[in-house]
Image (cartoon, rainbow, N blue to C red; front, side):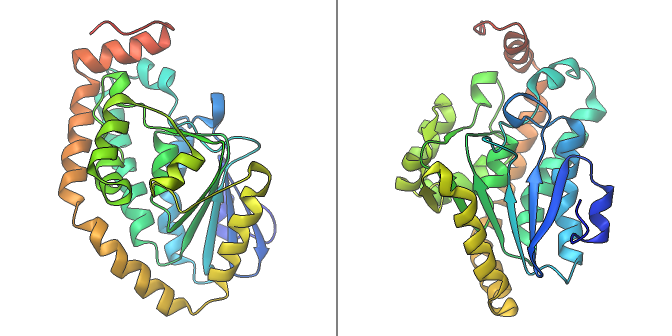
Length: 267
């Protein structure tokens, strides 16, 4: 945290905060795993963030970005494999997934994401649920749940069909196919794709414009449009439940084990 950030930010250890402008808060993810993967503490903080932001009237826009050349490759799969028999941990992760999805949707502040490099799993949830998503044209976006033997439950079912359509959503989620930032923009999965060197500056420009705009009109418009997304809440809850149950089943165990052992899963 820097001196310009809000007082509540001092409690966070995996997120870094600063104020590029008085009413604009920049949040940097610091996932300690490979390609910015989130450990348990980082995932918990990514979930808690939105409650604190909603309560902070000094913030009128948020820019969420990564550290260095990557955004976030999702949760730490090896850590998840080690905790595969910990039912309370799986339940806590599911609640954090809810807090991320509903927290971003309900946050009264407009949220802009600026992503370079890899975005997967929980990283994709943070990226794609934002009000405006800016990615590097050569970024790699992929939801890897199904290849790991898990239902795509943490965010995809609630938002992907609305963004890129049912046909593309099924293809990308069922196969785990990765797409570039440029491809993601072409299919409306993200708002904008720009050259890698311009990602954060473009995100900052958009967030600054929103911070300087009429706050109530922006909030009301965001909430009205997000009503489309909230209609799919039962779909999200069903997918999330399937993921939690599957994580303790034979396919989830085999997928996580294969990843930890650097081999192809045997279904």
